[in-house]
Image (tube, rainbow, N blue to C red; front, side, top):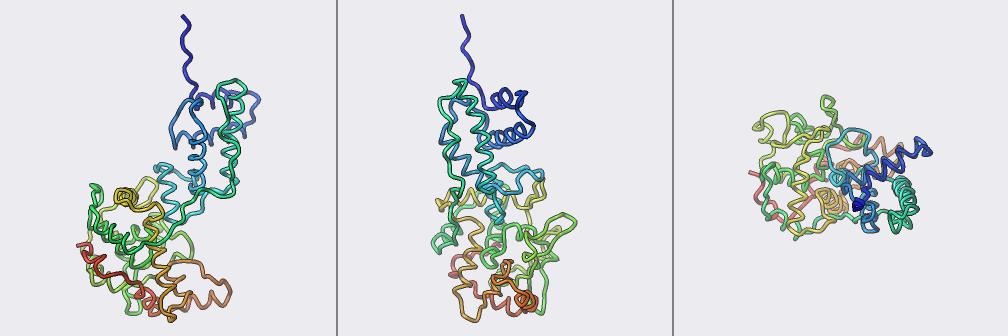
Length: 345
């Protein structure tokens, strides 16, 4: 009796028709292997006969959300976590050209499978590469914040007090999640009589702000002072201001918090366009709609953005922005009192 032929897996197709093909160039082998490995990392191995347009679309959308630096250093994150981190940190993502190259490599492999009648069609052709299927990010609404802050924090790896502390700092400063998680006790300083967060490189751990403009001071909002932030500096054990956070193998502190925050947000039914990074959108929107006394260049400095209007004069003026002006700016961040009434204690 003739044995039934086993389905051909994608990993087997790569080896059989590309890596062991004596006519394929070294560049073709390397590029195709890279594309296939990304697919396997995202979706796992599967028979080529069941990989269709739906999976091709999902892979294309995922590629558009991945950081451009992917693969340049070791990482323990899944591709979904890499995409989440790129979004939260506003990192550059893969270009349309890079996405197209990965899809074309898979298309070329499928053409070989078609010739051998191992698949019925090629799902990797006919796609647009001008734009990814990106979700438009925005700030939090008052109702969404109410839902978040009254929700049940269920993480066993990060305490509820740490969740509330990080969230409140983000809401009242507009700082990035990575900047908050990497704060050390010495990064809480009094400058010109004003308590401030100092966002600066930590050379011993290799962490640094994402841009030159990211190195800056952020005055501590009075609401954070009232909640006890300045006392926290003298009560935590260890070098970091935020207690109880993990550091991943690639040196990123707070990875588990990021996952737990996303899990909670999804469980509460909050929309996909809302993330921790949305606090930066909320702060930016509030400040740009605040009093005319708040200048846009102060907002850029507070959030660590490159100056909106780049010129020699702008660069000189940026260096002269006083701590008092930044304090005035940060105090313009206002939420209904009951949203953060619990604080983090």
